[in-house]
Length: 306
Image (tube, rainbow, N blue to C red; front, top):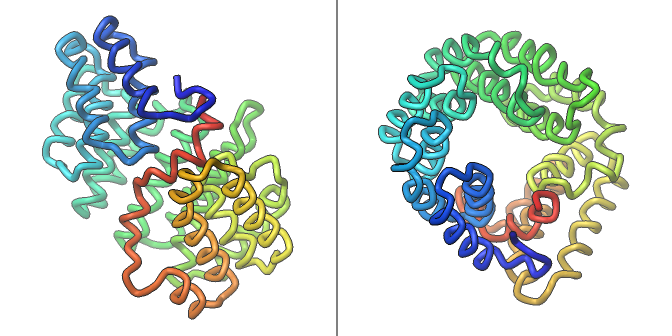
């Protein structure tokens, strides 16, 4: 739908027309929402699902798809209602479970989040590697934010997230994404030795270039992991590879991607312990929320989605 030219605007128009004709086409709706997510357009994502909601009110999946853009737009009460409506139809709707956990997490209802998600976890066994490990990532983060015993966080990492790699059909890159995201949180909270102990077991996999450029966030986390573990040659090669990919884009996309390259350089320096260089690179007005959803993300992701 995006096409070789990578024109997401055209793709969204096509999905809009398709969903007018086939409002129960889940695949088209999901792809439209993915494009919106990676283009930083939660308002449009919400419009897509609202467009087809009247024809799908009996379907549990529609409420999870409604809840997510509501979360992105900060409409927590509405997101909670939507997620709970999906779960009322099907308690094993994993996307609604995930989105309800987001609400709990955002509102610092950490105990409620962990109890709810752990009670839901048997229904995750059929999930993709990403969604299964991402849901466990949420559980671990909520334990961490609630200042629960650190062993609970480590148990989730060791027994639930990394356990996924033992499956013959696992998507390893998606596991690394959630594993590294959790280790970085441990690292910045001062649990450096624990984080590095687990990073050491991932280094060979992260130096494998086949997992590079699958997902922009994974690239950032890998840059941090490699540089923080003093694998500077590999980290430098990855950073240069990212820059090379950007330089091969058409001019408009290159301009959009400059902030992404800047962030990658800062992450590399952070892992290397060069905190002044991080500040010099990002400047005093840096706001991480500006990087949560931004058009430049789509430039790095669509190749692996479509």
